[in-house]
Length: 456
Image (cartoon, rainbow, N blue to C red; front, side, top):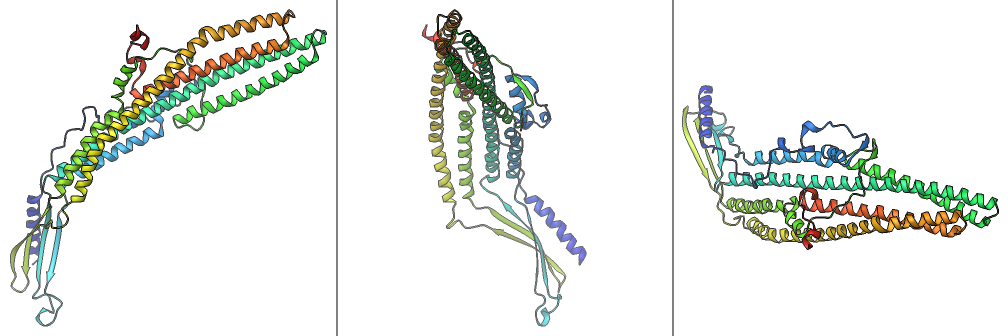
């Protein structure tokens, strides 16, 4: 009997193997720009995980390089991409066969009390997917993996933008601290000069009180500037996942500004932004999902086969079965309708994203242009004029031609102009960073054609 069971079991395994369909050919990528996980740069590559944190004096390039490798947000994408690849692998697998063992006519009454009259059936069943469901399911998973790569590219630009903004804040905070130190030193010198005049009987003691109040205010501003620099350094370190900054100083020319490319050129480049470019793959995925839902409307066929053993006569016989669900009520019509609506919505969603990006682009371009013009006026006219006026008043004060209020007002005007210049260049660099985020690339490499040159 055991030999017969073994023979039957072996035969059914061979029968099941004949019914299993071959795996489908892997579908083409949803777009031409996708790359494998091993080719992805920065934090998505396991071999770049141990780059040391920048110390001493750092540049923007150092900050970006370290953040792209060590950002927790980007590191998570290595797992997200592997998960998407795993889903693609799972989608390509066929249904598992089923082993069915059935024993009848035993443990009853009379002649059926024992196993002498029992009938044993050993069989295998296999679900056969129709309408090419497996290939369509695999294609949807492949496009979803492509979308995961687009999401990585968007997140990478977000990280770079945050780091660039934080680096600008550190540079600006350093400049403001230097300005506050200059103001504190100048107010101390002014206080001493006033004290000498008061002691010599050339100035009123009220001037000395004013000078001491101004000096105290300058010291408070100095302390505030130091705290802001500490906060800016911590924000920069947090952008690459560190709890405390290890660097000492940020190096860069905060005052270097250049005109932006023509606005039409930026609009053209914005089409390559991952937030826009990903919609080609998104619409392909929704169409592929619609095809999959339509395929699921076709019921799968369940076939089975095996051997039946009659204990009483020791005879065997083949058995076969065929099961086909009748799509009388559920024809997957709800899921098909949902997929159709999502396909129709994709066009409108893409248009909304494009319009929002263009609006953001126009806003950032306006802020960049305004900051550029303001920076030029401050650099060429206001700051030099305020400095010249202060030097003249300071010299006149020493000669007794001006009072202390005149000196105090000239000093305030100079330092207000310098502080405004720092704010203007900070606004410029942050607007430039936003434009680079919206276009997906550095403005230095976009075009040498500026708006001024277009007007000419």
